[in-house]
Length: 138
Image (cartoon, rainbow, N blue to C red; front, side, top):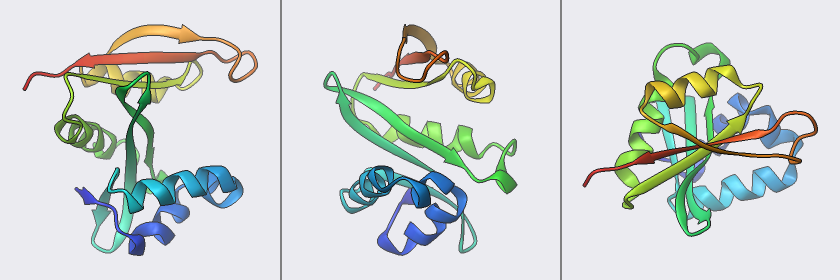
């Protein structure tokens, strides 16, 4: 696990099709890489997954994105990335979210000790966003 570098951007795009399709997402991730807020899991030279951490959620630490490449799913990469964000956030609370339809993400958060902390409607039609929280000990 390491902080992503500009050289990792092509690999991030390879495992995350939305980076190729959504210019806003691509710009956001590029800024996170430039600001040292993007963690990357590598398998040799290949990107296995990445996570973006920010503090834009009401001033709280928030895992904005956690993406694991299809070939690396169900191998513990998501857990490693989530644990790395916990270590690097430097705050007593960590939040994240996922759609109600995203059962693998819900399982990951719960497995890693996050608690469901609320629900936001009207972001994605018919698929509320579930907010998760974890108190971190320092």
